[in-house]
Amino acid sequence: MSSVVLETDRTILRPFEPADALAFGVPMRDSNITETTMFGAPARTNEEGVEQAMERIIDFSKHWSRYGFGIFGAFDRWSGAMIGYCGLRHLDEFDGDIHISTMVDRPYWLAGFALEIFRRNLEYVFLERGFEAVHGTARTYQMASVRLMERNGFIRQADRTLRDWPVFYYKCPREAFLARHVVYLRECLAELKPASPASPFINQPPVEEAAEAVEVSAGR
Image (cartoon, rainbow, N blue to C red; front, side, top):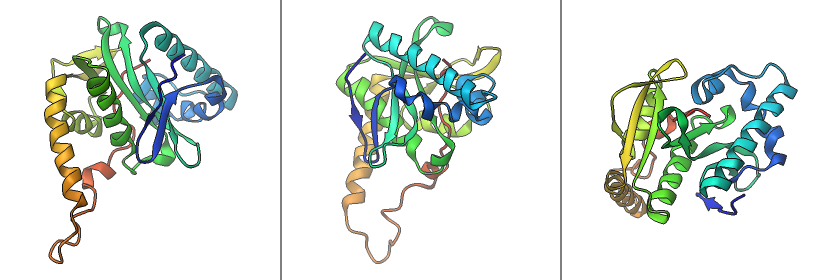
């Protein structure tokens, strides 16, 4: 199991542990989450949710052990509560392409967490690990997922099918992410400047950030 830990302003990102199964079992019972990020039916009971969560934790752990990268659990840096997950993994259905997968649990929707953990993972793989490209998929009605990817440099490819569902298919070359990252850094610098009397909302986050909830899905 990897010891890699990432941080954002509000979260700690670390590989899942078996003890996380109880918290992870909660979103496993939410159909809106399982059908859009895992492409499957929700668990019917608490026990079934924990069981499915443990299966995914074991699967994630094997990927970390084999490849040295994988899915991070996202946890509130103050309370320790599980917010969701985000990370990279090979997707067998698409010839082993490396895909980013993100899930935010229902209590944390509309708070910009998806963008926060999504971007931090891209910084990690492109700036710290030197990956050349990352892929992403989204169900065809998940426009928030599409906006999230395109905002970070993902380029749409030919549509595909994942587990019998039509999906938008995206690729983000390293150069495309770096170009968008420069824009992001400029925005951060602009936010550090004091607001002028004529612009009282200069430091407010973009509206589209608040609209992000369950975001990019890459299956199991």
